Image 1 (cartoon, helix red, strand yellow):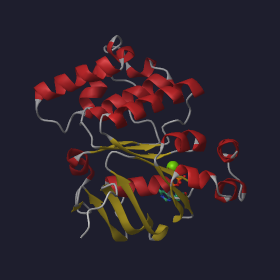
Image 2: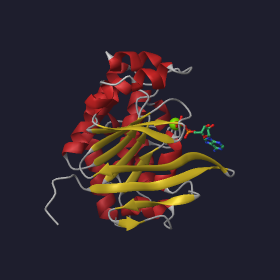
Image 3: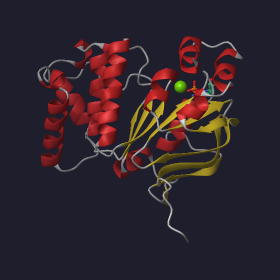
Image 4: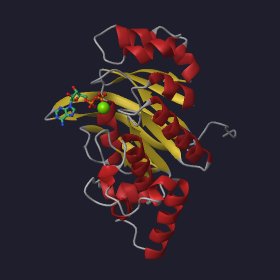
Length: 256
Ligand code: ADP
Ligand code: MG
């Protein structure tokens, strides 16, 4: 075979049908996250975006199809083993412990890591990256602002040294300034070799950072390609204006 310059796939969903209590939400969905890339997923509320991330992480078992990471079929692996293999996840709902200290939250994030020295090193690295967390390490996470808490979630994720970071709506609830800060970190980590798969309601922001994007609607892929190609089409308007959606303002800006 001729050598190819195609980016290599790090994680893949192949022909996945999945849902809840026997009713399919994802309908034969295929998607890949490339090594070293930032892959974006957009789509209206209820499209199945969070569902597909749960399938990738192993929190939801698909009815059919397969899930791949780094060349292996990981369908049989429980979430902890997928995380140990190099996938990290920040869920759409708050995923830190408000009544634990920042220090403790990072240790909890490292519960799958056995080497104490490694845990200590990674925690110090998180504090160097986010000094605001370091200076408040013994305070309860509950005192953090929404944006700082998102940084704590990123820090917690870094405790397992992920190769693929999976983020479900990281900008939700944050001020524009904090959204920029979070995405600056995404860019920085990406340049350090971490691949990203990001579901986002902030379409404009996602199209600005992603190098490949999927648009989901009703559990199906409506588009895959470059952000520029997506912004060129009427699809954004259709996805976000064709039905009632809270997301219309961002879609407007993305399509102009
Ligand atoms: P998105 O993240 O794109 O907004 P979701 O993947 O959360 O969409 O949800 C897709 C569909 O699946 C929605 O109709 C939602 O109501 C349904 N759904 C999500 N989670 C559950 C659940 N735990 N039990 C039953 N239905 C669910
Ligand atoms: Mg969701």
